[in-house]
Structure formats: structure tokens, C-alpha cells
Image (cartoon, rainbow, N blue to C red; front, side):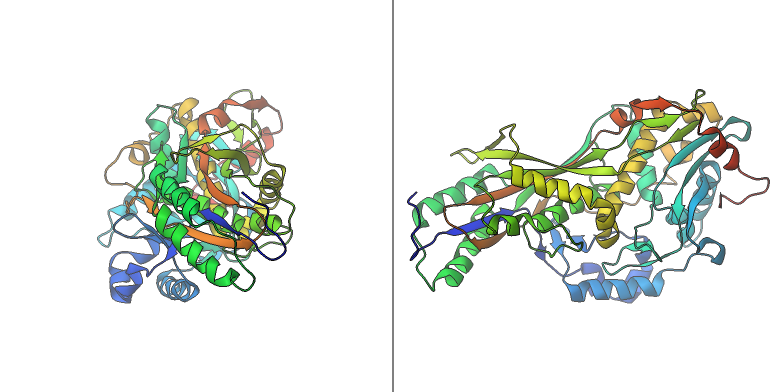
Length: 466
């Protein structure tokens, strides 16, 4: 490829697994239907994204998100007064939570109370404590009351961090109970045919762009990239693809790519898009692959295996270069581009702040926490140690997570930038979680004894307490 002169330039395209904007079908049905289907519990929208009956992800625009928020605000009940305040140590009894959830499912309306659905407002889980004398397991973490956030997700009233969901806990426990110790993962990737179609198109139309032609040629090339590459594939492993848990994995992956490639402005300072870093002339021609991965320290535990602490940020961003072959297939190189690594490190460093600004990243971390806890409970037989029968949560058909359209495809969106040379960025990636590996790493400590003593369920306590 010839070097562009000062009079001509070539269009560089950033192509990635993005979501086209589409109408939210639930809103089109109107408020009456929303109430009928138990709208507040219905997670057909996660992080401002919905899934149509064909399994194609659709990004909501600001107006659609505002409509969604208004409907959810209408039907969402506030947390009870004694659950509203922020606390670092809200305790939830698994034994009594199971009873409350089972009782709620038997309600003629089939609606669980919000406090059960949102696990008493828990925003993370820090401790898992076993009480054999009470036949109970207690989960402990920060919590507060809730509200509907800007994207329509249910978040903490002061922190903006997403609350945990009972459905995600059920999926995590049932996934762990299968015992196959699979890695939980999702991936969004262009098809080999789509990549080859785009490569063939570029070979025929890769002519210099003259001064004044950039905008029109950019529109033409981005349109063709989207058409030639077409729908990209979503692959899910180790998790029920019809679960809310699976939706969170996919949407978090998708939103990471939107931020990296500059389709959405960064919600936090100090975290520019990867596309803007390349536009600044500091990058080289690479095909980065980004993914989000579990990031925990070894679990802390006492000598008896009755007290456990989940430590670490939970999530980190990873990257690796890819090479696209002439037949459209792609392979990892084992190399890391310094600029792509800098962007991944920036996302990791800002992840906690990002989780409050973009709730889907907090939801991903919540799901990872719950997956680790599920693996811990199964691998250490904590229910057996507690003498706690968790069969309602693990197997009962009367207490099952809701099911939704499995995400299968996302449309391709392309972005153009002014940069010399022929640059094609195909930002593949996904999410990878190995909860069994996390649960197997632990350090013994004596510091958990006071936590265990203070968190013992008081006599006559409800299923949660501070």
C-alpha cells in the first residue's frame, strides 16, 4: 500500500461488535401490558439494551431509555424505610431468603417483593458465613435502598451502583450445582465469511481520498463495512443463554467495545477511547482483542471453613493482538500492543467508578461475585456444613429464574477516522469467568472470627438485618 501524501489520505475504519438502535418492544405494548408481565422484574432491557425475538441485540436511544425509566419508576416499589439507609454490612439469611422467595412465588399474582428480588439492596457480597447451629448461611455486603437509574436499571439511591438480583443468584447456584466446573464465557465475533467479504470489498475500493471527499467517502465505507460484515455472532458457554445472567455478560462486552471504539463518550475522566488514542497518531496498525476477566485475590477463610471473605476488584480488562487471514479466519498472536494494553489498564483502573456510571459493568461484577459464591458453596459443601437444605434454590421448578430471548447476533457498526495508511480494527473479545479457580485459591486468617460473631442471625430476626 502506497504512503499517502499531503494531498490524499486513506480512510481508516474501526469496525466492532456494536448494536444498532431499535425500538423496545415492551414499551410499544404500553403500560398495561408492562404491568401484566411483571415489568419491574422483567430484564428484557439490561444496560440500555434489549433483545428482539430473533435474538438480535438492539441499543436503545436516549428517548427509549427515558420511556423505559418512566415505566419502571411507575411500577417499582421503594425499599422499606428500614432498608433505605446505606450500610457496609447488610446481612441476608439464605435459609430465610429461600423461604421468602418460595412464598412469594406461590402468591396468586406471581410477583416477588422487590426486597426479595433485589436481595435486600445488596450491591456486592463480601462475606459468606456458615452457622451450623442455626442451619443457615449468611451473605454480607454493602447495601442501601434502590431507584431506577438513567438507563432503566435498578441501582442504589445514593451510589448509583446496581443491586444484586435473586435470579442471578439462582442461576449461579444452579450452574455450580451441575458440577462440570466449566468456564463461564461469552464472545462477540464477526463471521469468517463477513470478514472475507469486507476484505474483498476493500481490495476493490481502496483508492486514495482526495481533499474534501473524506466525509462522503467515510459514509460510503462505513455503510459498506456494516453491510459486508453483517451480523456478528454471540457465543455463550457454561451458562444458560436465556438467563438474565447471560444478558449481562453480553451487554457488558458490547458496552466495553462501544467505549473503546468511541461510539459512546467515556463517562469517567482519564479514560479516553482507544479510537481517540489512535487518532492522536500514537498507535500502530493492530487488531486488538479485548475481554473482561475475573480479578480476585485469594479468598480469606478461617481454619474451619465457616467464614469466607471475597476480596479484590472482581473484574479486569485484558487485550491481545489478532491477525486476520485471507480466508476471513482470525488467530491470536500472543502479543500485546502497548497502546491497546494502556487502554485496557485504564479501564481496569477506573472500573469501580465506571460501575456507578455504566451500571452494566457493576452488574457484571455482581454476577461474577455470585458465580464465585456458587462455586464456593458447592466445592466446600457449605450447605452440608450448615445442615441447610437449598433444594428450592438449586432444583425446584417452583422457584426458577425467568427466561428470555437468548442473545445470538449483533449488527456491525463501523467508525471512520483520519489517519494515514490502511487501518482495520476488528475489535473482538468477550467475558471469561472461572469461578472454580477463584474459589480454590484461599488464605487462612484469624481476622474473620469477629465478623462471624457479629453477623450471627439474632433471635427472631427477619431474613435480612444490618
